Length: 231
Image 1 (cartoon, rainbow, N blue to C red):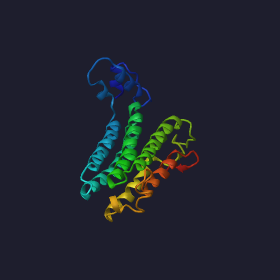
Image 2: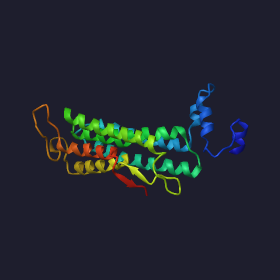
Image 3: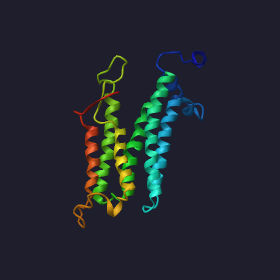
């Protein structure tokens, strides 16, 4: 790999290939220079999005067909698997990726923010106020990921250089909500049978009280005081 870098005019360095990636991305030549700039870990991150796009596709199925919503919920853990594997592969190959840092946040927002909200909508949590609360949840996930990208360099580190803790709950913990929704489906608690029913039914303020767990989880993600030790 070192000889390849030398022949391309990029000096070998310990930056994990970031300088070479910058040159490829800024190059005016080659239709596929961006593809060449992707690392293996980046492709795994994109698999994260592909698996959860499959999940969201099933959210558009027949609301009375439980097979579709089961498929939607079943695809969500694959997002967590690929989210875990891209970091493992990057460390194994000793390559860090500038694009990977951005792709990871975007993929996490889709996998652990948009997908659970879409599943909740598919289950019947879809009044106007439900929409507001679910949007709040997604925006909290977006804000949490943006804050992580900004503060990761200044958080306390351990001897290996890893941050000692997560500030706020990590966004993949929203899979716990997906697990709860899976239980509801197993009990046929969907649409008119959603637990706790509908509050203020028939008014402009009607909403499903269970949507408040999305609000609570959103607040926990953006919390400044919650510190979750890293494993």
